[in-house]
Length: 195
Image (cartoon, rainbow, N blue to C red; front, top):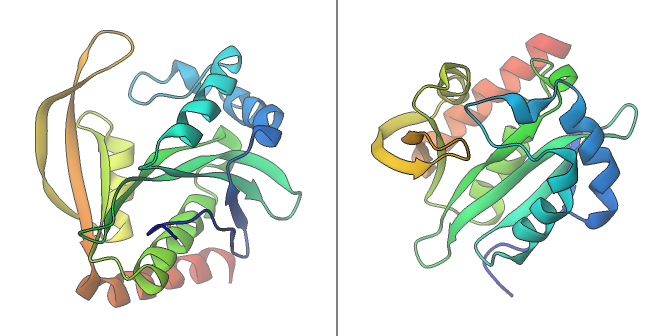
């Protein structure tokens, strides 16, 4: 048994299921909600590229990918992934996340992160969980900071983007001693939104 196995994580608003080719059509519809592939600061597959993206995420041994479903209507709303899994050091990153435009700012992303972080710290006994984003993606940086993650640093000229630009990557993390306070704040935020 490896450090991280595919698992279904269920919340009130959202359920994260192990990524499957059966989710293809739902993922295409979710990415089309807002034409997310046109966002310059992130990488979301265009509809003809979705099969290849699913294959890619399923093939990498350092990834455990999920499809996000909206619970009330059982509709696919996006993807998220445990990646850069480091079993020896009990660390992983949460990333490769995108949500349909209609699912953004609804609490579904917060609950997805709560589910993923709870599993990482409470079931996998992680020492730390990382988040990474484009230096220029202010929306993502602010959202990660609101989760309670601390900025560790910036990897300058870290990645070539599909459009040929060079990305500086901001690295954030939550460490195990911080998790109880982070969890309480995420639970409070969800209750305030939907209480």
